[in-house]
Amino acid sequence: MIAETVCSAVAVAGLGIAAVTAYRKRFLAATRLAAYSLVPLGLVMTGVVDWLADTAFSPTAWAGFGVLGLSWVLFSTSRAVERRRGGTRKERRAARGARQEAVAPTASAPSLGPSARTPATRPAGQSRATGSGSGSGGDDFSDIEAILKKHGI
Image 1 (tube, rainbow, N blue to C red):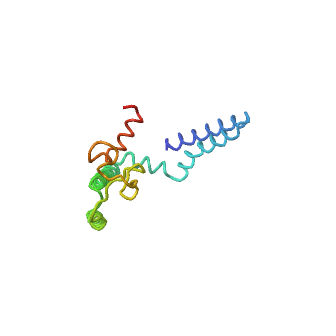
Image 2: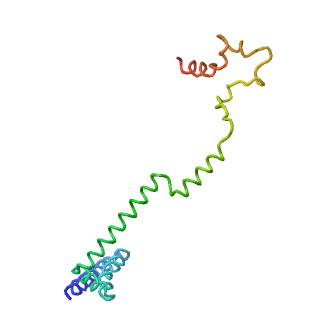
Image 3: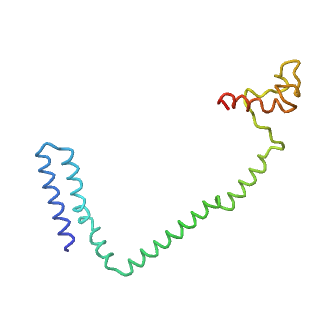
């Protein structure tokens, strides 16, 4: 009974403030205030306020909220563990099978970019051993030397 009176008073006060705001030519703000002030009146008229008042003082309702909270905690925990492991058992098996099928028999060497010379792009007359300098591995470090020279090292 008191809740309905309070909600009705809040609605009337809100509509009064909305009327003053509309009088000041702020129609958008007045419309918004009227909408907010009609919410408590609508809650009273639909019976939600009675239901909330009955629920607030009911030990059975609070026990039900406790059970719902426990259910939510258990569900959230199981989902977090599932995400951490990488999905359900079925999903992990499917992913493992897809990974084994997708593995190539031989791995390719990493590309060193356009400065890396392959035997087909090497100038005629230069062998691998006499590439660009010192020893047999001179061609392997030529791009590294170029980067170091570029930075003045």
